[in-house]
Image (cartoon, rainbow, N blue to C red; front, side, top):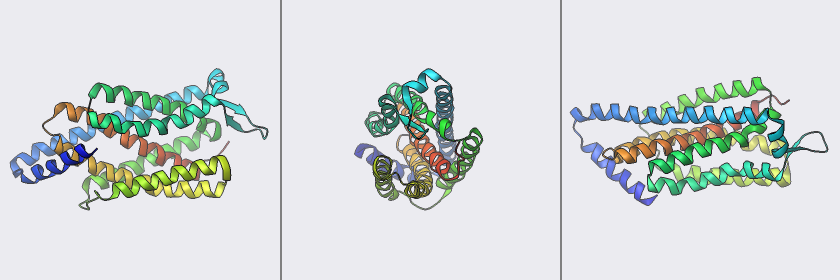
Length: 255
C-alpha cells in the first residue's frame, strides 16, 4: 500500500508538469481507464444479480443456506453463515492483490468475489419484494452516477478522507455484527443503514478521485493500469453494493 501511495504522489507531480498539448490525450486516456472500470463493475453487478436470483429460486441451494426459524422467518445454516461473511473476508484479502498489480490474479479474484457476493445476497429475495429490490437498485445506480461524477469533477482534495471513512466502515461492521447476534434492534439497524448511505456515498466520490490519481501514477505501465481496472471495479462495486443494501434496509418493502 505504501508503494502505491508513493507512486501516486510521484504521478501527481509528473501530471502537474505536463504541458497543455499532452494534457488532452492524457484526459482521453483517463476517461478510457475509468470507462473500463465502470464496465467491469457493471458486469460484476450483473453476475451478482444473476447468482442471487438463481440461488433464491433453487430449493436445493436454499435448503443448504437457510433454515426456517420458530417464528416462521429465515435463519442461516452453517454454510449460510460461511457465505454471509465470505465477502467481508475477501474484502480484506483484496489489499494483498492490489500491491502485486497482477492482471490474472486480480481478474480471478474479482470474478470470484462477485460470484460469492451473489450467493450471499440471495437472502434479499427472501426478505424483500422484487419491486422494492428493483427500485432501490435503480435509485442506487442514479446516486452512484451522481456521486462518482462529483468525485471526478470536484476540485476539493479528498486524499485525507480515506482513513476516516475506512475507520467508520470498520465501526459499522462491528456494530452490525453486535446488533445481529446480540441486540437485534430494528432501530439500530436503521441507524447503521442511514450512516451507511452517507459513508458509502462519500467513499464512491473519494475512490473516483483516487482512481484519477492512480491513473497518472501508472500512466506508463500498461500492466499496472490493466490490473487497476479490476481493483478499481472491485472497490467501487463494494461501495455500490453497500449503498444499495443500506437503501434497501431503509426503504425496501418486506415480504
